Structure formats: C-alpha cells, structure tokens
Length: 165
Image (cartoon, rainbow, N blue to C red; front, side, top):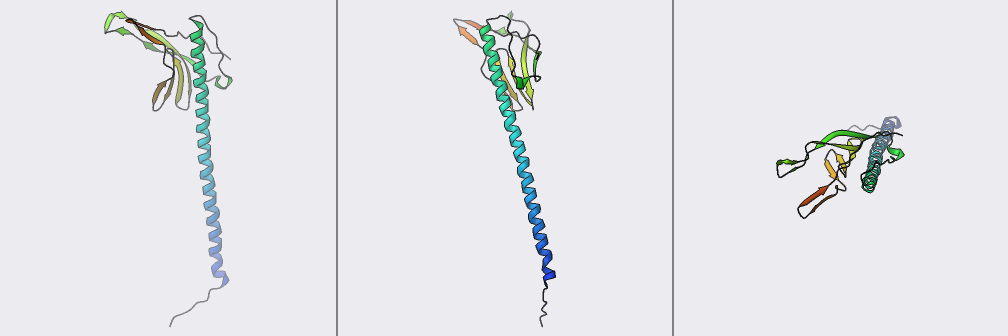
C-alpha cells in the first residue's frame, strides 16, 4: 500500500521564497561583477589615453629641441601632466669605435625628461622618445643618426634645469 500525502499550501511556500532570494542574489552578484569589470576597463582606457598624451608631449619636446639648434630652450608641460614630470640625471653613455679606447667619448652624462604612472614610463632621452612597460621598451622616433662616407654623426640633447608650474 502506497501512502499518499497531500501537500498543503504551507509546504510549498518555502520554495517560492528561496527562489526569489536566489534570483535576487544571483542578479546582485552579476551586477557587481559587471561594474567591477567596467571600472577596471575604464581605468585602463584612461591610463592608455594619458600615456598617449604624454608620448605626444615628448614628441613635441623632441621637435622643439631639434628646432632650437643647440640653444637654451624653454617649453611648457601640458597641465594634465604637471607635477608628474621629472628630470633624471642617472644615465651615462660611452661610445667607442671598434673597441679602440683612443677613439672613445669616455663616460658622459645623459639626462632625460620622464613621466611615470602605473608602472609605465615615457621619457625623452638621447634624442628619442622611449616608452617603457613591464614587457619592455620601445622608441619612437629614434634619435637622428647619420652615416655618410665613413663618418658617423649623431647628437644627444643635454637636458638640465627645473620643472616649475
């Protein structure tokens, strides 16, 4: 003999409540995940746009230095970059011809104008604009170097001074 049991409306009302709570919970979790992903994406886009502005500014610095023909030059830093740009004097270079120390520039200082944000750096150094990330460095454009009839010519810009607002 099979026993049959009749369900009353009180026995089924708990499942409807659990269903509503689960649906609301899943919806809230989905909304939080979408908002978190959106915030990260927007921040990344803002960082990329800011780095593009910096790179364009450094290209303008390069153009200004190339046009100045070795004279003292003053330039303006875009307002969105103020307070985040610095002059660094921590690099050195030494050019030697065919390993012959008699034909060497000896060790020389090489200054740079640098902007650093969120692990990325854009710098103007040695006549080129460098963009350094965790994955490596790229230069756009490279410094002016010319080779003609056995003669190599290049120039490095000596950067000195202060950044003021």
